[in-house]
Image (cartoon, rainbow, N blue to C red):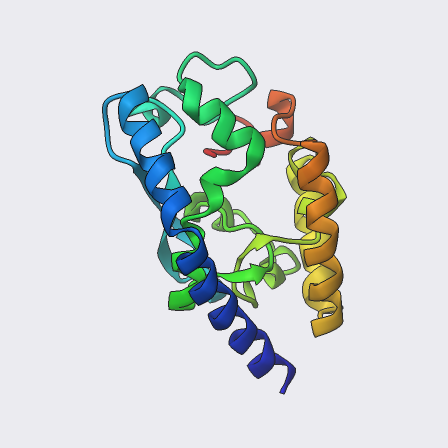
Length: 203
């Protein structure tokens, strides 16, 4: 029953979120197009529930093809556009993920979706974070966000999966507003994004 309610809440939240954000989306789209050449959205394949690939949607915050120059993006990265910098600091670049929530590939709360090459390195314990749909916000997000190392984030996500309840989701959702207001954890030292030697996270 709790899982059913979680999905129902996701659908209602995403539906009304998309309606409410229609005008802000239009304004953001215009700002992105005026600021730099390229599409409004950044679309990328990520690992979803049970490691099933899906396409995640974000507002584009970097110049076209920037991800080919390296995975890590730190504060002051020249590849981040002026509008993109603002979108990242406000987390408004995540708004298009309402589409992912509505189509069921993501949830409001859950482990943040990562790249398939990263999940390929998971051991059996770490694979537990793939037992639930990824989320826009999650336990790791409200307990350090990008200031955490990858092992720390994965461990927090596994804890979330093992202790999940609808009330825990509510707690995380409410805590998210405090994290968002402080604007902490948007950027972090490069070493925090290393999954294994020679690899870095693509944001």
